[in-house]
Image 1 (cartoon, rainbow, N blue to C red):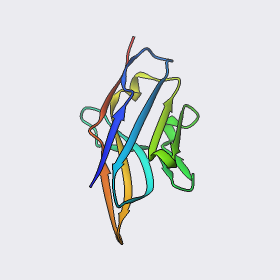
Image 2 (image 1 turned 60 degrees about the vertical axis):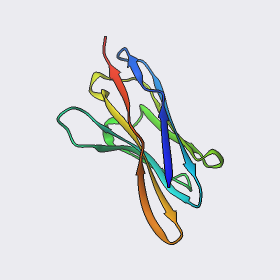
Image 3 (image 1 turned 45 degrees about the vertical axis):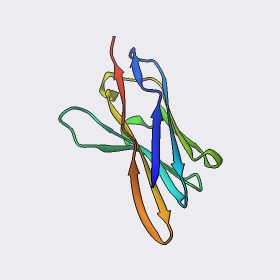
Length: 119
């Protein structure tokens, strides 16, 4: 079993910054990739950014140049630095981990953290 604990959401004005963190804990697993998804009211949950253990990243087009995903493999922690935030970034942000346990692949989700961009 893998637990993901997120932190760092909140209310910020347009143009501001926030940093999200997500720490994975448990035993007997190896992480292949971690990422952040978001879901706004009435919308489907969608990928924001993803990073592999090897450091390969990908971003949704709307956040390129504004958001940066990074990870600390030793701490099993992923971060999302969000700059130049816009009202359309308002959503619940979910941490995601793609892990291997023995020879099986699993996917885990955090509980979500609210990000609100508003003046």
